[in-house]
Length: 143
Image 1: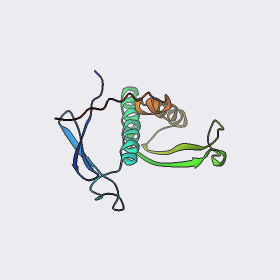
Image 2: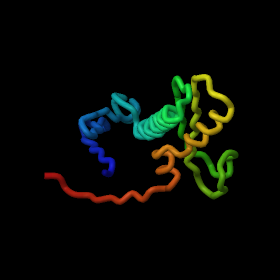
Image 3: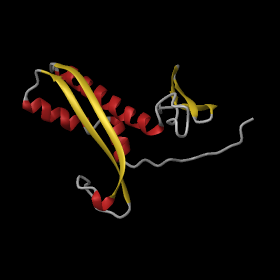
Image 4: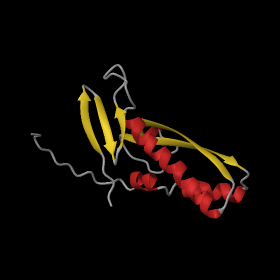
């Protein structure tokens, strides 16, 4: 079943993001909104971070590894392609760069840490972002 989310305007830049009985508030910072919730890029980073942590926990549990906790910190920035030392491809214009730092706690050996690093890059949200998904829009006038 495909993932589904609805986003409903509340006031100005404040929006209710809802899915399957759960809801969060999205907003813009005070310079553009009321700062009542995370902005869209923070929501995107949150999705990637949560997916990373959950994927690692599931994998470690299945393997019986002593992974106690996973904390993920993420940042997003647009940089000139020529200034991006860590980027794999060289191109003109700007590059969207997400930096993800994963801290794990537990009595894990070097091989387990290497495997978790490998698995982190395969969480579903990471794979979706890396695949450059097609966004198909439909616009209509509400009743």
